[in-house]
Structure formats: C-alpha cells, structure tokens
Image (cartoon, rainbow over all chains, first blue to last red; front, side, top):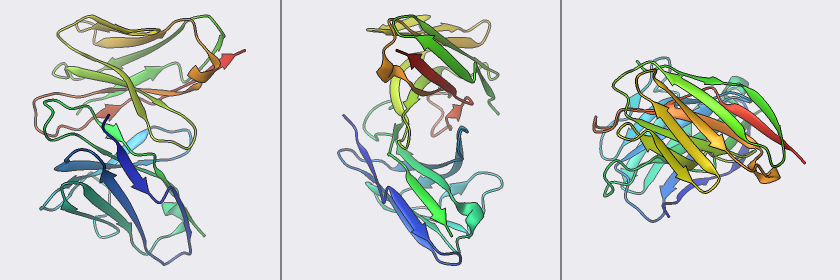
Length: 117
Length: 114
C-alpha cells in the first residue's frame, strides 16, 4: 500500500532555532502534499498545501514566513519551523495523495512531535 | 466552507458490543467521506471511506452509512475488540475539484472495556 514516511518522529529544540521536518511518499508520486497541525486531544488543522515545483498555499492565519514549505521533488516535501517558540510545540503531520490514482485517498505520515523549550 | 460535526467526543463500549459514531456535514457538494483511526502518537490511518453514490459500505467488522438528504454519515464497529481503542475522525471532501481540502470532524475517543 501507499506509504508516507515522516522524519523525525520527534524533536526537541531550543527557542529561537529552526527545525526541518521531512515528508516522503515512499512508493508513489505526490505532486501535492498537505501539512497538518494537531494539538493534544484536538482534530487535525490544515496548515498548508504543498505543491511540487511551485509555492505552497497557506491556510488563513498560518504565517508563511514562519512555516517554510519546500516541495522540491515528486516524493519529498519539507516543513521548516523557523525561529521556533514554545507555542509552536505541537504534533505536525503530513499527508499525500497518489498522482496516478484517480480520487486517491489521503495517506498520512506518522507525525512529528515538536517540543520547543 | 465545509463544516463537519462529530459525536460523541468520547465513547466507552464493552468488548464485543457495537460502537456507533455519527457525523454531519454542511456542504451539500461534498461527495467523499473517509473515516480515519488514530492511535496514540501516530498519524491517522484510513479505515473505510464512502462516496455519495452509495448509501452503505462494509468491510468485515466496520461499516459506514451515508444519508445524503440529511447530510449525515455514521461509522459502525461490530464485535469490538481492545485493539479498536483509538481516536476516530470522520471527514468530508468534494472529489473531482482539484485538491479540495479534506475537512475533519473533531474526533471520537473510543475505549473498549475488556
């Protein structure tokens, strides 16, 4: 089946530093990937849509300069949390659809737990 | 935009009994309704989905029903087992509209009591 790999699974960083999270589609091509944020005991909130070869589309209220997204290939999207602060601590999850499957379902990675101290 | 409501937020069920989780959606143009299971510390996993051209779909112990007129859909888990304990999310989306985003419900924490 379609597998989305996310790395790292957890990261602890100091306030003011930047953290990069990778999202890979292991056995399929994904022109579009999605980045979600999830607070404890809450639902998934879409942050941005990542498009291979073009700029990401951010949801309202999400700072594009703080959450940098790069989608340089058909199998890799990265999310960089810049100048991280404790309030950025959260569970970040990426997902992807298969390009070659009509109406492909959304496949999710296992998430990255970010803790900013 | 789409708004998905989900109930209940928590549900405890005796092992072997059935569990039902209900969702309503607001956008009548939504035509794809997946259900995801999320275990602690992991990403959501698709367990079943239904499209608006059918009213019911079943996969072993899991079934989903859809009422387009009332704009609600439900997840049914029969013969529940301890490994069914997790958070379940419903979602809605319009297919064939490019990359129309998936809107999630608020989640249901299901606990199976041995």
